[in-house]
Length: 133
Image 1 (tube, one colour):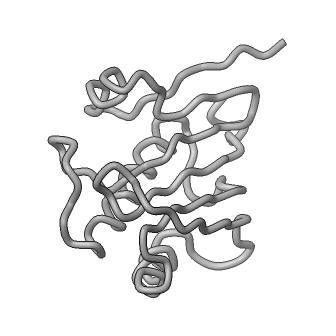
Image 2 (spheres, helix red, strand yellow):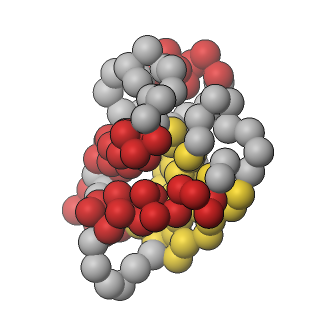
C-alpha cells in the first residue's frame, strides 16, 4: 500500500502548520494540492484582484515544483470564486499565461460566498512524472 507523503514549498511552512494541513499530499504518482490563494508573504490577501490571482498561481507553481511537477502535469483543476461573473475574464487571462495550450486539464469553477478574506482559490491534482520519483 502506498503511503501518503506531505509536500511543502520553501518558505511557507508556518502558514500550513498554523492551519494544520499540508500544501500537497503525494500518493503513488498522484499529487493532490490543497487550495492555493493569493496571499502575500505575511499571509494576508493581496487586495488587487488580478495580482491576487497571479499570486495564487505562483503559490501553486511553488507547490508543484516542490513535488517535481509543473503545470503540464496538472490533470484536474478546481477554482473557487467569490464573484464568478465579474472575475472570470481576469482569471482566464492569468490561466492562459500559465497553463498554456491544449490538451487542457479538467476544470471546475465554483462560486462561493467566503474564502477567508480572499476572492480566488485554486486546487489541483497532478500526475508526478517518472523523472521526479
